[in-house]
Length: 361
Image (tube, rainbow, N blue to C red; front, side, top):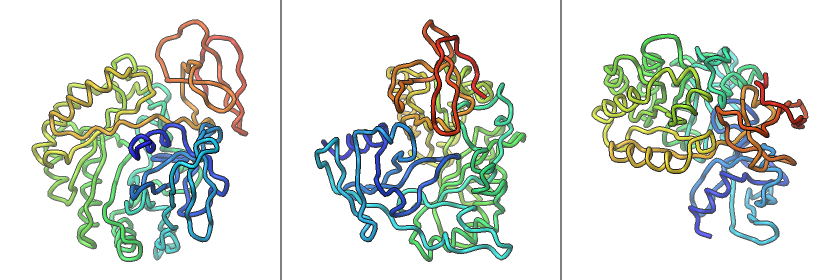
């Protein structure tokens, strides 16, 4: 199996690890690549699910040597490849002057990426009528693994340490969406400016399209090098069912924003995420990716990886894809016969009764 296919398989099925605490710590729950762990395969480091129910039953497994962080990857009982795990970063041991651990401000993703959510709240999250049903931005905050607002000076301090101590080479800053017309672009610009004053670190920012596209130039001037604006889903019915708040922003606005942003940041420096498994079929995802590429926008097509302990608001789950002892598939806005109620329990158990699907709160 070639490396590209192997990485796709691991990111879809997850990895069953005997001693999962070796290497840099993964993160259980919350926003971003939660329930994942950084794994290096043939020189490429990727985030792979390990703390999910699917990973617990994955055909891929590895036993790690805790001293060397090396392991042999197996498919069933057959050895597939040698893998390794990046070490815990040194900057995690530091605190700000007011006592906040650096790891609550920013985290190491992959091998050399510093990542943060500058605003850990979102105007859509607390209302089921507007929340994105795949989003868990509030989980990290509720578990006290992060702080609600990272100041520009805090981010600059942590970024400098991550570069100096751990060789971080670039940074990703995302944000929950505030109830302002700039959709977080203004605060991202402030954060980028502070970081660039402290350390020369390439920065990608991520936000919803602002109402006025002049914010792209403001972010660029402040030090943002590339921009992500995430579609997640494309089909109108899927968008309305899965992300009702974001669905009020038409696809046409996103594509107008992509076109304007490419003019500012450059070809290949604007990106978006498409989550495979939310309901879009393959033809829709491929056609959308081709359209984006032709515009100069880089589409990241990634598998949606559910985790039952915090999946909270997901609706209309159809039984098809294996998760633990049961099978669930993509999310759907329709209600065909045969759907079931899923009651998520604290111990990762699923109780199923053969009735009509309802919201799980």
